[in-house]
Length: 482
Image 1: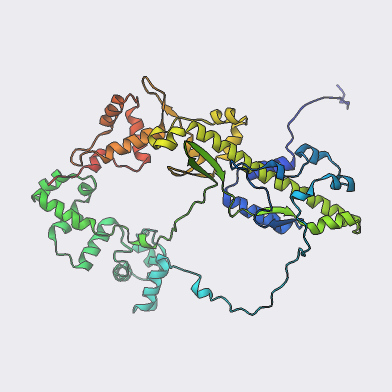
Image 2: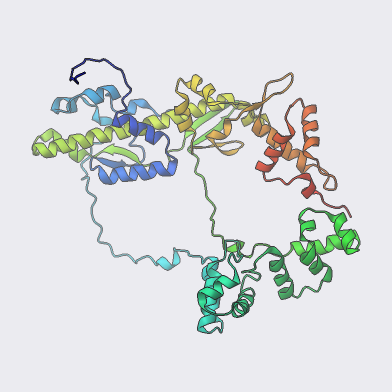
């Protein structure tokens, strides 16, 4: 059978995402910081765009929603198909983005003599654990071989300050004996913070006991032999194996808990991450008002200089095509940012409607909510709701929460509506906080208490929620009563 080439006409439909649509979707899922960085990049790459002063750009109406009347009059579909000729440019209502004045768009240079900033006073720097130890190593009296061993010891410490390699490996690398490395290690373990470079918790605590001069034989014995009982809070076993009364055991454990189990913790330079909410929810009388937080987000407008260049017609055709292309890109960016803000506003307003009890009474009254509920309420797709609620934060009378916080599955409840999983976690946390330390609730007992509240939950689910909240099991929460 011979192979032949034929032409065939076939009609198909497919979804094509234009670059403008891709840009709008990308902006929608960006966090506040990422949006500001993206706008900054566009300001650098697009000469048609410039940052407006406060009040020049689109502002919210009385309800806090962005006012669409302050955007260009061309719809997005029209903007896509309209030829960018002189006639089309004249039909656009530029007054909303261009503010006529006699000032030049180029800022004047200032020749005023000012004192330069002293950067030593405004730049802060904190050393990490390795740098702090290396500085002490340089100040100590070590020969070259010992100094190399010390550098390798410090370089193999984890963030908690524990040594994560063997003495034999360090000795082999330096070319000395393990005994010599052990001598260097003993000296480094007395550096600040004391107990650093220990190989396990037992050694770390014993070093601190010796250095601080704690003369407590019982505390030393507990650390040396019975750390596993201390970890499990098995006080009766400690009384049995040591022959000491419970009061003395509790006293010695108090001494041990005053020591630092992780010497390198104070050098973990994890600064506090402050969250700037994207939207605010205020209670005014008996209603909640939603307001966008546009502070810090640059307001964009079109540079008048390029408008005049297009109107005069005195520029070459190549430059004209370039300006028209950048103008089209700038218009789409402004509209995409506006659409992003308006979508966040609509979604937040819908969440407020569903979670009014939470705003009034707290986390215990959080209702189960899924993306589909909000999507149907605002007339959008679930994927859009998912993008909007990612890395977006709202300030409410109950605190600052990520928008995704308000979406949770529900647990069955007799004779009433379902209860959100966050509310169940809060109930478990309250029960554990109010329990008797000498006889804490087991997971099974918590299940029985929740069943009395008509909340049906499995024991393994209680254990899962407790673990997610960082709460220890009942055997490790037990405290003796003296």
